[in-house]
Length: 306
Image (cartoon, rainbow, N blue to C red; front, side, top):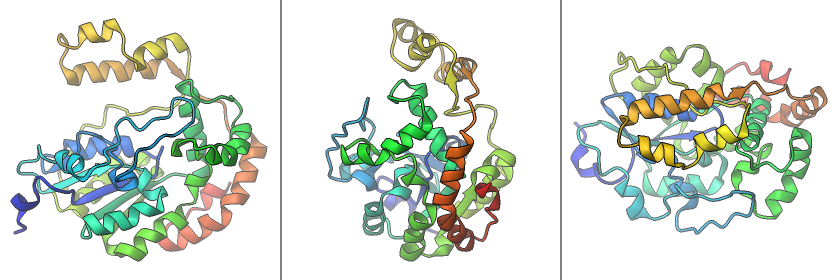
């Protein structure tokens, strides 16, 4: 039996490494429900991406308020673990940033990894819509935002604005295969999570060495995308305000979170589709990487190229 007690207040056993806007928030919560899994109370500590750094990004509303950049602070995230046999966290930035791999190799060389990959075109658009939803994107035109991407990166905007660059998964995932080996990595598709989440979770639980018969509550939807029907209502629901402060001691946290998520979802409407010309251009940009990715993970990704 592993010496669980010795590592208890130190480092995680597994990491959900991405991709961003591919269901990692939902996966974090589903994993966190398992009695034998302890997830960092900070969903995205980003430690291995930003260790020892003091980020000062320059895009609208940029900041890394939840980032944990010291080893002591990171280890403290797992101090609340008790008898759980698997400790983890979910920081999608790890898949994207090359420097995260060597830091993980240094600190947790025996870690396991879970990645969920989404059609890179849909992922980029979802990320764009997220910024639009929160009133941070300076243009409402997706094609224009893509055209501005390189300039924004040069100006020091945060990684969330790297709409297109974050979708070259073969390049990014290959670094983990080379550093840690295929047997330590589970790769799922966003379609798996949406289509049959229970089957995905059974496999993920088994991969982590915990009871795969556990059935989590899948009813609550997390980080739902869309365009706000009413921006004032959206701002009130997302930010701090006296009503939310007053309700905090009166309503249990679980119920409060469920109500808030439900109200946010009701205030969102479906976004318009990606312009056909923009989609065609992105298909060609991603084609080579997607074809290589198919071979790496052994999945048919032809649907991504339509």
